Amino acid sequence: MIVVKSLSKAYGKQKVVDNINFCISKGEIVALLGPNGAGKTTLMRLMTGFVEPDSGSVSFFGEDIKQNRLKCLSQMGYVPETGFLYADMHVYDFLKFCAEIRKLSKADFAQNLKYVLSALDLKKVINQKIETLSKGYKRRVGIAAALIHRPKVLILDEPTEGLDPNQKFKIHNFLQQYAKEAIIIISTHIMEEVEAMAQRVILLNHGKLVKDTTPQELKTLFPENNIAASFYKITNDSEVI
Image (tube, rainbow, N blue to C red; front, top):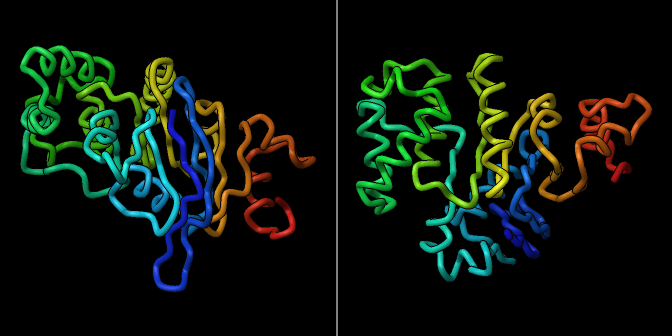
């Protein structure tokens, strides 16, 4: 279980994450929603230990990330939106490098490599340089790197950006299967993706958690019966909470 308790972070006078609380259990795919500047990326960085909070805490399976960051990170895979891949490396070498950082044995690496190559349809590009890949393939290599140690928690920032509809469908199916034994958190602006994948929505606005609900409940909050319309009304009307 992930427990986020009274989490806050400010940059100067601007509070980008403001007293956020929630818990997430194994088997859940949770979508982080919010307009640009709502605090989604900062929240993910706080949860992964890349940024320290001003107050509050994040724990993974009973371990506080501030007190035991390495143990928490060993159970986690994180794919940021940008700046993750080494373009001059071949796909195999990059995944091997990620496995070595995770201190995987040769046997575990071989087994997990076979798994991620099949799950993400990367066999055909295993010997290519990352810089030669399409945006969609680069995205899948990033997800493969986050999965190479089979983490209990997978945090993905815009996981299907650059993928075509068929690739998105495969990723959705894969994540739904993987979530049966893990926790998956995705940040996305694609409302169809939220409905297709997530069982739960955490909606942020101006750094605050304004809704913790399901996609189905979110879409029925207003007469339009549409998740995009509900998102728009909640994030543009300070009286709608």
